Structure formats: C-alpha cells, structure tokens
Length: 623
Image 1 (tube, rainbow, N blue to C red):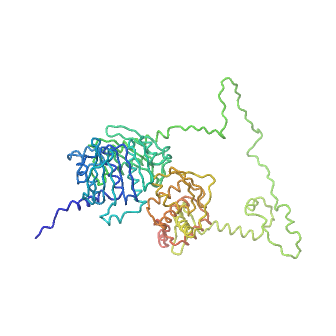
Image 2: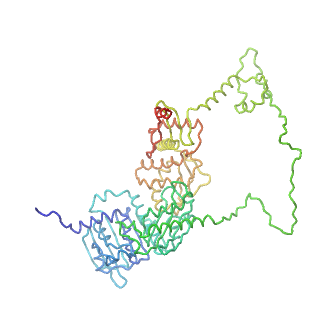
Image 3: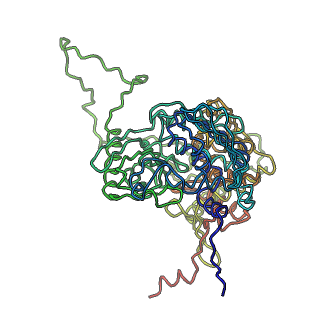
C-alpha cells in the first residue's frame, strides 16, 4: 500500500497560514504597522486605495533592514523578536511569530524599499505569491516602505467574500485606532483614496483619545491611575451621562497591546451599577502594565486574547479603581455662576442692626367656621334670547347649553326642579358607561389587553408601536412623502472618522427621511431639520443611534439601509414602556397594528402579541 501523507509545499503552507493571520485588508494594515512600531519608527504613514483591495502602503522611518534581512523577512518563522521558547514569556514587542510577511506575500504582490542608516543604498524587493520576482539596490530614505497590491489575487474565493468598501474601510480604521491609542508618542497618518482621514501628532494619552474620537469626549473622561505590586492601571473611564446604547468606545490595552477581556469588562460595568440605564454601555480606555512573565499572549491567532496569571486579583483592583474615579467625580461640588432669576443674597454686615421678622395673621380666622356659598343660577343669563323669534308652534332646536364640565360643576348647586335635556343626560350616561367598561385595558402601563373569541389577547404597546411606525416610515420613503421640519435652534453632533464613513453612505437616505445635516468640518454636523412628528426626542442621541445601527448592519443596498434607518427611528419614536394611554389611544394602536403586514413580530423578530386561551383562564379558577 502506497503512502498517502505528504509534506505540503511552502507556497501552499503559507496560504494556509495566511488564512489565519490575513483575514481581510485590515489584517495587513495591522501587521505592517506593528512591524513599523517594533522597528522604532517615530512617524508612520498608511495609504489605502479601494479599502485595501487595490493597494495598501505603509511607510515608516524606523531602523530599516539590510539586504539579507529584507530577503529573509519573507520566510516563514523568520523573526528578530525571539531566539528561544522562553522568550515567549517575556515579550515586549508587537510581533514575534515571524509569520506576517510570509502570509501576506503568499496572497498578494509586494514591493519593499528599505534602508538602514549605516548604508548609503537601500534594497528594492518584489514578491508575488511567495516567489521573489526581483531584487535590486535603490535610493530611498531610512526606514521601510511596503506596498501591498492586489490582495488575494491568487485566492479568488477569499477576494469574493470581502465585504463592501465601506465595511472594509471601517475595519481598517478600527485596527488603526487600536494601535494609535496605545502609542501616542508616535505620529500617524491615514489616507483613503487620496483623502486624509487621520493626521495625529505625538502627544499624551488624553489628547490622542480626543483627536481620534472628537473633542466632545474630552469633557466626559474621568482619569484612573493606580499602582500595585501586581500591575499598574491607568487611563480613563466615561462619566455616567456619557453612556450610550450602541458602539461605545471600550478599549483594554496590556503592555501596549490591544486585548479583549469580557471578565475585566464586567468589572467596569459593575462599578457603574445603578448609575447608568440598563442596556447602555460606558466608554473606557484602560491601560495595564503587567510583568511580561505573568501573562501569555500566544493563545490566539490574532493576539487579541491574553491570559493573566492573577486574573481575579487584578479584577478587584480594577473594580476599586473605577469606583474611586466615579466617586471622586460625584464628590466634586459644582460652582454655578448663573445668577439670573436667583434671589439676591446680601453680603453679611456685622455692624448693621437686625430686627426680628414680623408675622402677619388674622386672629379671628376659624378654619371650622362654615361660610355660605352663593348658589350658581340654574341657567345662564340671557337664555331667553335663544328662543327669540320662534312661533309658539315652531319646533325648538336643541342647543347644547352646557358643556360636560359645566354639568359636573353645576350638579351640586342646582335647585330642585331644574330640568336637563334628555339628550344631554343620555350622552352623559353613555360616556360614563364607556369609561367604566372600555374595550381595552392597560396593564402596568406596558401591555394592552383586549378580549377576543379565543381568549385574552395581550399586546406589548412599545413593540406594537415600533411595528406601526416602521411600516409607516418605509411607506413614506417609498412614496417620497416625508415632511421635514426646520429646527429653530440647530444642534451640533460630532462624529468620529469611522462614523463619518458610514454617515457619508446613509446621508442621502436620512435626507429622504426628513433629516437635514449640514457639515461644519472636522467631523461636526449641524442638525437643521428633523422629520415631522418626532418632537420631544433627543435629536443628537437619535442621529447617533441611527448611524450606529447602520454601522452594525454593514449593508450597502439602498433598501436595506432604508429598513435599518426606519427601524432605528421607530425604536426611538415609539411609545415607551410605562406610558399610560387613554381608551382612544389604545384603540388607535390596536387598529393600526392589525393594518400592518405583520402583526405578530417587530421588524427585529420580537413577539408583539400573546393570546391567553379561554381554557387556560378557566383552568385557573378550577377548584
């Protein structure tokens, strides 16, 4: 029997490794920028074309490489970061496996220009699909210049499954932000299709956070700095009022490396227990300095998950540090200099004479003494004029002399023998019957209950209104009948670079829905118009929520964008849980709900209606 197990060629092995390391264009940006940081660069420029599909270029002013090192760097497991296995437990560099360049070269075409400071000429290398296609000396500045073109050119299936340019660019921006936030001492720039998205100068941590996410975040940051024998934790957490439902800025960094850690995330959220609404998230930027031998970075292909030796102790330290920061913020008294409309408090003068205050009262007042109230007349003055000019045999037209409120107030003061029209009496009786036995009942301000043939139907009023508004907004969009209402005092909303890329895509659809957003530059927009009928809503929170929803869905088709925006708007404009409704309002919701195309579920799949069968109700009263 012949042997069937064979060693794979290096080119095939590199493509397999690329499947783990290089998942999308953002992975290429991450690996190349991390290599530039390890090379000691003080300035790093990133340029992408078509969200990395066409080309990705990373230029740095680091140490550079010699001719031999430049060629050897594209071999698998060739690295300058470690020499033996024990070095894995004392890592201080971003990369260490030596797989990145080999994996990129296996699925793309690369041109590298690099020069060391001690050399007069640099090296120009060309690699395509793991094969060297050219090598020659060249003139170039100190550092390295990587140009990656036609990513996944030899793996069509991988290229086919890349997302839209907007989604892939957002992934690049996310990877870029995770790196620039932890290295504020390095200058970074990011260009997309020739447009500058980021230009970050060297600064401190707080300035870098503000430059990346906008100036409005600066006023919501609370500093944290605690140093123990186990770790040093510093950074910032947001104030309770900075909480938001979607896309909060939440970042953990350990030893200058981004990480995801659900256990530590729970510690931060626990510190804000009962300070923020349920379902909302708080922004935080927390940096851990831990001895390298107490963590293991090499447990995940993308190195985003890290194992700690003293995880529970660090959890307690983090919880206490966040609570202390929030407590200090709440203990600081606020000084209010706005004295308009406030009482004028005179300055204390010890030499001025003071007198006891005088009390003015009526000594003859007796609260138990009854005073006669004048009775109201049984009919208003001048009632005879209503019948002037009528013949004795003519038909007297009924006139509503009294409003319902007047009847109620006059009931106690009417004299005996006063005659009320039978029609008025009948209408009052019908109103009282309707109030006592309405067709719908509301339970705890959340559910509408009504009797049906099969039993008791229970409707979630908030979800029902979401379904009603969602279909109404979609119908208005399809018929182009949306009305925009101008805002008397425009509000300003600030977007980060990643949010702006999504906003540029959905702005035409938002304009069709009635929103008018005018750019002020620097990621700021003025909200000059909103859809009619959403008065009383927080416009800034609504616009942010709609953009965040569009970012999460990652859709590019117009119909899908319309559905996402309509759902977000409906959720914000719907009747909230706990709002008491009148019988007429409940009746309108029920009628409009059953006019919808789908009455059972919300657009996101949550149930709207539940029916309690008659047999189940009768079974509750069985003895």
